[in-house]
Length: 229
Ligand SMILES: Nc1ncnc2c1ncn2[C@@H]1O[C@H](COP(=O)(O)OP(=O)(O)OP(=O)(O)O)[C@@H](O)[C@H]1O
Ligand SMILES: [Mg+2]
Image (cartoon, rainbow, N blue to C red; front, top):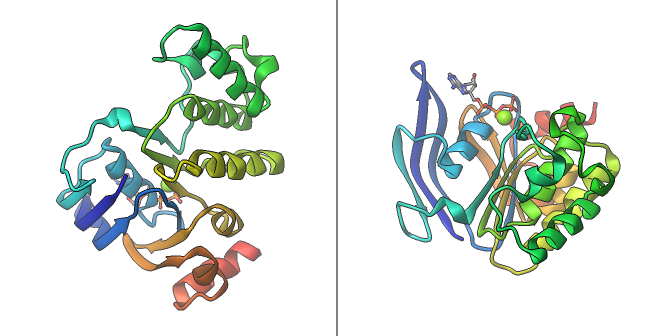
């Protein structure tokens, strides 16, 4: 799915927190959004996911203003799991067939949570919950996958899992994936392009390895230096 943003603005309490002149997310590509706290990353992703409305401007999905949200997966910054078992969380809304059951187990095996499939989701740790959220994405085929800091609570092996998941989903060449991350290494590993945001604006964007290894602006240089500390 292709997304075109034009003059997109979000204002909270008289403050413009997202302010994007023009940007295009191309179909089948992986994008990483980087930037300091409060840059407007989550707000922008929420607008793309349709859970938040912009105050000005437009988002076009495959050149249409409206979109069938069944084509979109959104994984919010705070993992939200329903008060039921792990496996039910993964399979929610999916038809109850033998094939689906196999898909759910295979997704749980993939994220290393198959042994906890009958555990109550509310009893999981933060990292375990994120793994379940990834499994939930895995059993659904979407044209647009939006992930807000999917690796924030996970350990190294889970980061590798995330990288592998993104490559796997992106293989069909049709799914557009946009993920917010504080980790530039993840951005270089998975994203074709990276976007650096600050004060609601896109300060730099381009090929991940170029903008991360050769940042042009002082803002991005400072951001990367802080990250290394
Ligand atoms: N519902 C809201 N009401 C008022 N202000 C909000 C709301 N949501 C976000 N903001 C403000 O908008 C700005 C951008 O927030 P946002 O959550 O998009 O930042 P972010 O880049 O995702 O930051 P982080 O890295 O900390 O997650 C912040 O100043 C925040 O306080
Ligand atoms: Mg955020």
